[in-house]
Image 1: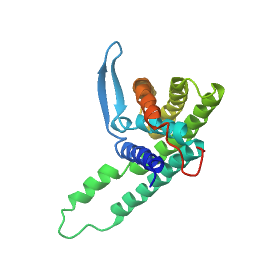
Image 2: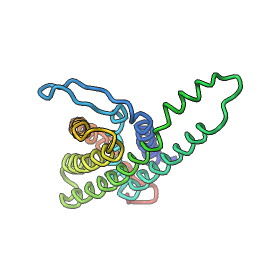
Image 3: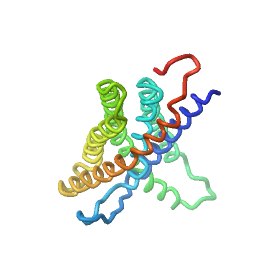
Image 4: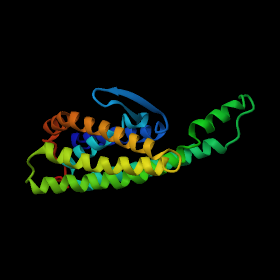
Length: 220
């Protein structure tokens, strides 16, 4: 296997791992004390999620739009497959040697996962495809210059769309408007901070892997 493909598989693996884990952890929240604003409230699933946007930007830069879109669609279908596996785990009968309370804990832990994944996947698919499109728009507009602009410009817009969609779909009708707005603002502030902090990582990734060439020719 060529270095070109090894790096791609590694990036895709990181992307898919962060995506699946973020879906499982979406219902637990934590408060983070912040200067000036006091505190922000975010889902624990949000902690690994911004990495997915960094990785799609790297794949877009190094491998082109087609491969980035492929990874995004693959993440969507694997999340649906995860739902199927969790559902099977829910309906199969418990072994006689196990305490029935285990089934109750399983349902409590994963009972809402279907709604969470469907909500997050709707937002994810829209936001990621917008992110890739905006990334390549800025790349074409700037003639391949200004990495920071297409990295942050695409991520900040797509993350805002993702945040508004997933919170309103998932918690609309259950939470108060004030709580929803607070979580949207908190989540976006966290994503904004991570997006700015990961810019050096984006530059480093492009610097170390820019020399990768596909065995059959140019990047897509």
